[in-house]
Image 1 (tube, rainbow, N blue to C red):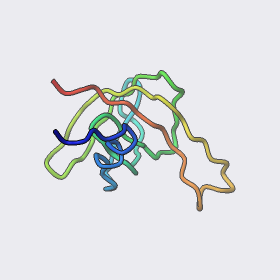
Image 2: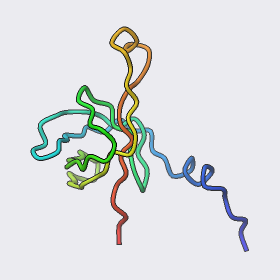
Image 3: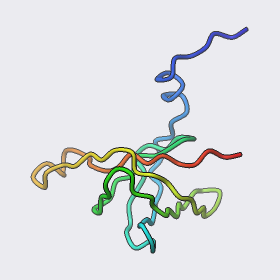
Image 4: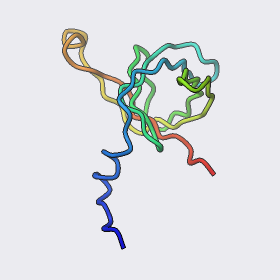
Length: 100
């Protein structure tokens, strides 16, 4: 039997650091952002428009294998003051639905 990995170790293995274009919004997908970190269960979305935790967003991801539409829930927000935006990244942690 293979040893079980701790949750943080599994999360680290399953992350993709590619920059993928994402259009997003609560109703219409009117804002443009980029992934900085993408996994099976969620993503970190960098964009100028941030939504509060609990907001349900419609997302359109431009993946190399094709265009994909999903809904996600904002779980946390990292706001960065304007003076630091060149050196620090702000954005939202978004939970994606589990594939069945």
